[in-house]
Image 1 (cartoon, rainbow, N blue to C red):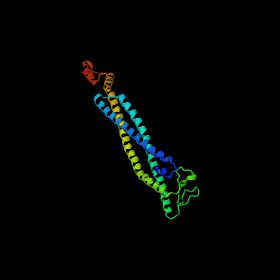
Image 2: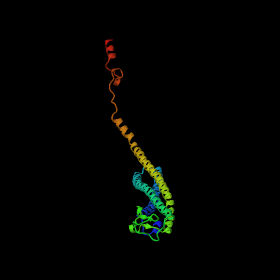
Image 3: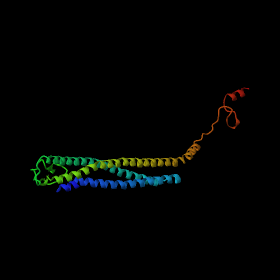
Length: 250
C-alpha cells in the first residue's frame, strides 16, 4: 500500500481486500478457538456427570447438536483458509512482478536518458515505468508513466518489505490450517465418544427388563407331564405295555 502511495494516483483493490481478509480471518480464528475450548471444557464436565449420575440423555443430545454446529462452521473457516493461502500466494506473484518491472526500469535509466517529467501514455519510454502493463494496479491511462528515479527507488524499498512478509503470511495461514485440522479431529472424537456413551446407556437400560420378560415366557410355556408307557406312569399304576400282558398270562 505504501509503494502505491509513493507512485501516486494508483490503487489496488485486491491488496486492500487481502489485508482486511488476513485480519478478519485471524480474529475469527481466535474466536472459534475460544469456542472450541469451551466445547472441550463442557465435554469434560459431561464426563464427570456421567461417572457420578449415569445417563444424561438430554444434556448429551444438546452437546451433540452444539458439536455438529461448531464443526460445520469450522469446515467453512478451513475452506476460507485455503482460499486465503491461495490469495497470499497470488499476491506474492503480483508483488514480484511489480518489483521486477521497477528494477528493470532502474537498470534502463543507467544507460538511457530520463525525461524530466512523466510523459503521457502511450509515449512512455523504456527508461520509465509503465503502470498500465501491471494488471492489478488501477491507474488512469494518461497518468500511467513514472520516470522519477527517487520515486521508483522508494517504491522498490516498500515492495522489498512486502515481498519479505509474504512467506510469513503463507506459513502463518498454513499453520492455522494444520492446527484447525487437529481441533476438528478432536471435536469429532468427542462426538463419537458421546454417541458411544448414549448407545451403551440405552443397552444397559433395555437389558434390565430382559430377564423378567424371559422368565415370564418360560412360565407360560412350561411342558405338561404326560403318562408314560411303562411302570413309571402316574399314580404308581403299571402303564399299558408288555409287562401287564405277561402278569395276566401267569
